[in-house]
Image (cartoon, rainbow, N blue to C red):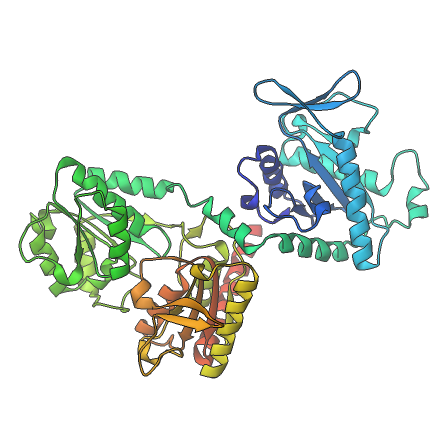
Length: 537
C-alpha cells in the first residue's frame, strides 16, 4: 500500500505510528489502496487533518485510524487513561473511539464541502499496536485493531473487515440505500483532495527539519570505511556526490594524528579546505592545497579529497614525494568520484587511476547522505549519473525548466527566488550556482566576471561557480547556465551544480541541454518500468 507522505516523515519518537505505517506499506495486495498520515508534521493547516492519525482509502471506503501506543485503559467510572513507561496513569480528555469518530465526521464534512459530492462509505477504528483490549460496548469488534493483528496480513484483514463495516453498518441493512452509498465507491475525488491537504501541510521548513533529522549519524558504509583506514595503509574510497566522502576524509585525517603521525589533508578546493579547517581547528592535521604539496617526504599519512582533480602523472608524483614510503609503500587514503566529476578542474588520467587502484584496498560509498530523494532522482534521471541510494527523506519537488534566452532565464531565476521567499526560506539558505564551463559566459556575469552575489528586490543571494563549490553542500540550490552537456567538462559542471542541494533543486536550462535531459529522463522511466515488470514476473 502506498503511504503519503512516506514513513520517514513520521517523527522518530512516534513508535506506534511508525509501526502502523511500516505495516501499511508492507501490505502487498491486488487491491489499490493508499494511506495518508497526517499527525506529527510540525504544522497543521487543517485541524481536522491533525486529529486523524491515518486516513486509509481501501476497498471503496474511507477508513480513519486513531493510533494509541503504549497501554491505555478505563477506570470504573468510565474515564480513559494512558500508562507511561513508569506505570503512571494519565487521563485522556476523550475516549479514543470518540476521537476517531469526531475526526471521521469532521473529515467527511470537509471533503463534502470541498468537492460538492458525498455518500462515501466510511468507518473508524482505534489501533493499539502494543496491547489487545477486551471487548467493550463502546465499539464493535471491527473497530479495534490490537497487538495480535500487527502483521501485514493481520492488518490487511482488519482493514477488509472495517471496509465491509463501512459499506453495511451493523443492525442497519437499509443504511447503504438511505445514505446513497455505493458498494465499491469511486474515491478518486477523495484521493485528490487528501493528497492536496497532506502536501499543503509539508511546508519547506518542515521538510528541512525532517531531512536534517536523518543526516546526524554515519551510515554503515562510512563506519566500515573508517575501519578500513585502521587496518590498511592504502585505501581508495569511491563514491558519487552526496555519499559523504569529504566528511569521512576529514574524520579519517583527525583520527590518524592520534598516534603522533604527521598527517596532511590535501584538496584542491578552497571551499573544502575552509570547511575542513573549521572541523579540524583543534587538530594537528595540516591542510594542503594541491598547488602547495611539498616536494619532500614530510608526512606519515596523506588524506586526499576530490582526488579526481589530481590523478595525473605530474601531480601524483608530487604527492608521492611528500609522503614517507611514497605511494607504493606509504600510508594514504584517497577519495574521489571517478565517473562524474572528472574534467571539471585539474587533469584526470585513466592510466594513473588504474595504477592507484591496483595498489589499494577499494571501499565503495553507495548511500547518499546529502540529497533529498527528489534531488537524487532528478539527477539520476536527467543526467544518467548514479548518486547512490537516498536515505534522508523525500524533500520538495526538484524542477528542471527551459529558458530560450538569457532574459527568460533571469526571469525564471527571479521567480524561483520569490517563491522560496514566500515559502519562508531564508535568503541565507539559498545559493545560485553557475554550471557554465566558462564562468564569464554566465547569464549573471558583469563585464565578463561572475558576481559573488545576486541582488533582487534589495535581497542578496550567494552566487558561486560549480568548480568553487565542489565537495560542499548548500540547502536550497538554483542552477543556471546549463547549456553544454555534449562535453565532459560541461557534464561535470552540471553534475556538480545539481548535486549540491540538501533540500531543494531548481534548474534553469537552455534548449540544447534541456532536450538531452528530457531524452535521458524518458530512457530512465523506460528502464524503471522494465525493472518493475521483471520483478513482477
